[in-house]
Image (tube, rainbow over all chains, first blue to last red; front, side, top):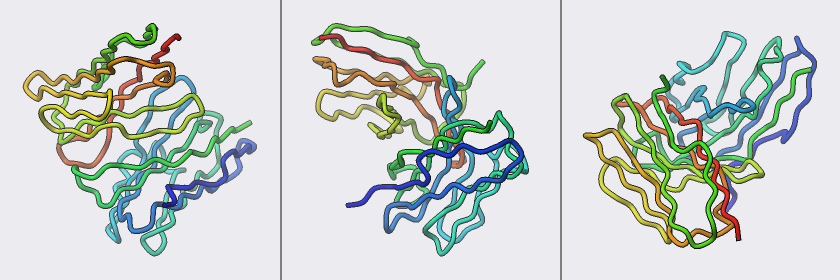
Length: 115
Length: 109
């Protein structure tokens, strides 16, 4: 079946512009996660959604970052007034539910470059 | 000090060798994940474990909760195993994930 998909695969934007990154989770997966991988650094948790519950935003690096999940499926990560330090690969993952016993499936990522 | 430490950072092996990658963590966890990131960037979840040992093909993962340590073993390594292997722990509140810096494995034919 189809895996997690993300779009765009690459995005180049000018400093100060807003960007939207999209994630389509695996059908039926109620949990959705966003991560960031900066160049030369490890993965960093940003935010997760479980069903219709309020998201856990504890990992978002600043208030310029926000995320929505419409209808419990597609999610959009929005970065306002982008800065060069926002350049990274943004990864989305989904799982059947937000439970320890469920595996996460990762999308291919969106490579964001802020010039 | 990072909450999740992996060793070694880089590892080069000859095809057929037995590989061990270690992960130590300093926080309470609900689960530990081993991930594989291919050169193209795609990430695959290899194992998720909260106790004991799991085996999948040539891969074995163990965890010692008391010692806060996990190992990933690859038997009969092959060049296609070349990738970055990442250890990640899920906190006791089952919310956030913390990641190790990864181990870059290169298996030469």
